[in-house]
Image (tube, rainbow, N blue to C red; front, side, top):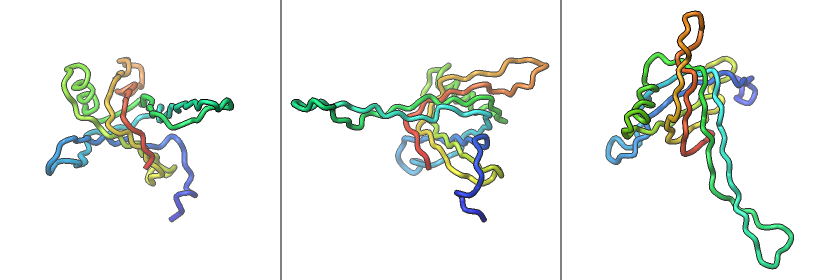
Length: 160
């Protein structure tokens, strides 16, 4: 079996796994339960930005001290998706249309090697929440897929 570093890697093979993020205590705490999955043609917004804090020191005229500040995360946009169930729509509908509390989801974006079977790296979105769901246009002559876009905000980005 080849080393992971020697496996050719493309940017077009990945899968998504949505798991429920439970905040309760007891025997069900921290249990991982796959909720939904999907295949999307495009994923953008895997980005974290740290805002540096500038500290000026009296008497120091040549520059200021730079310290680490708060981190913000971009909205992750999944485009041209397909799923065999309505779990992602139900999740979005609970969050936005009904105004009810919904479970946050942890989303694993598993980057696969060119053979499509070997995981190379996994990006994890912590406590993701859907903020936009766009369906493809209904056109009998078109070949569009069911979900055109799904926008997710989240509270953390990890590379595992």
